[in-house]
Image (cartoon, rainbow, N blue to C red; front, side, top):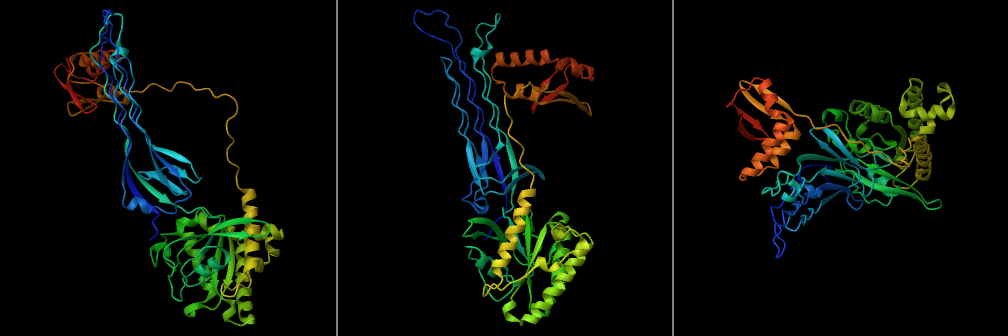
Amino acid sequence: MFYDRARIEVRAGKGGSGCVSFRREKYVPKGGPDGGDGGDGGDVVLRAASRLRDLAYFQRQRHFRAARGGPGEGSKRNGARGDNLVVEVPPGTQVFEDGRLLADLVRDTQSYTAARGGEGGRGNARFVTSTRRAPRFAELGLAGEEKTITLNLKLLADAGLLGFPNAGKSSLLRIISHARPKVADYPFTTVAPMLGTVEEPESRRQFTVADIPGLLEGASRGFGLGDEFLAHLERTALLIHVIDATGYYGQNPIENFQAINRELAAYSPELAARRQLVALNKIDLIPQDEYGRVAGMLAAVIAGLCRRGDPAFAWLIEDAGDAEAVDGSQAVVPVSAATGAGVPALVERAFALLNEAWQKAPAPPPEPEGHITYRPGTPEHWQVVAEDGRFAVRGAAVEKLVARTDFANDEAVSHLQEQLEHLGVSDALRAAGAADGVEVEIGGVEFELW
């Protein structure tokens, strides 16, 4: 089974706590504090790996946790940083959180940090001042980020095969590439997208092609396999529309062509505007004059689409120079996936259209040259929230201070109070109407204001 969606939980490593230590060495009186800092927690990193094809691994493994940072030690020895956890995904994977796109991993080895490790706490050696010569407290490490993310895979293909069930898409993929999809004489033989590579031996040109399960009229509303796999065509530069010239099950090839294009437009106008080439398949099963008649009707329909400004066939206008002079037959290639007739012409036409699309593709942004100036960001803000006589202080600046504090250590609590006073938290609470003795919540911990 092909898996193109997964929902996973990632948790970065917790930072190590700082160390409370004093130098105790013979002949060195009052050696002073020498506690080291804790190490940062490890990150959870998603990395594209070309050897992977789908998201099947994430159906049985859904929780990923990076290593914790090591605690600080005496003699100002810092704790080790936690190891990063690298999770490999197939190229073409998109990362979402609450419907928001975070990353699109399209290149081999491209990576994205899905969850960042928590910062390590500072040891007592970092808190020495002119008035506090022997601090007996250190900071706790911060927790790492924890997220529930969704992975969506969109195959990376240059061209896509689409059409009604049993139109011969899998047979065509077999003959033009090295792929070996299942081929049978019944509809919906293909139940998962397939990828193949088309190569021209003489020039060694290549392009990848995706075969998606057959569509039915009403697919955008969930009929048949629905639009479940249409997303795999969104990255393609060319759509090869495979039409059964025999009118399978009494269906009209022209009506099939129009029905699929309606479903594309209903699913995504952008996908419907993609360059399109028509492969009129199974010409070996009917006389030449019969498939010639069908090809002529398709060419007339396509010419009409050009005159109405359909972007899928705008490339014909570019070739002809005028919509009225468009020859729709240039977009229709009669082929037989069974005998190979017409297949070289189809591949050559696909190469030509892809080369034009590649040349028009926007260039990637250039890498920055020379030196880069980094400027400090804006300070982290906080605010007092009052509701129904209850007060809370929100903001990363104050919540981090609370998370780093060891409340079993009176000196650490006293240090926290000094920092909150320095930030003006007490004054802000009183300005908001808080009286002495009222409970105030900061970072999940409740305090009394005095």
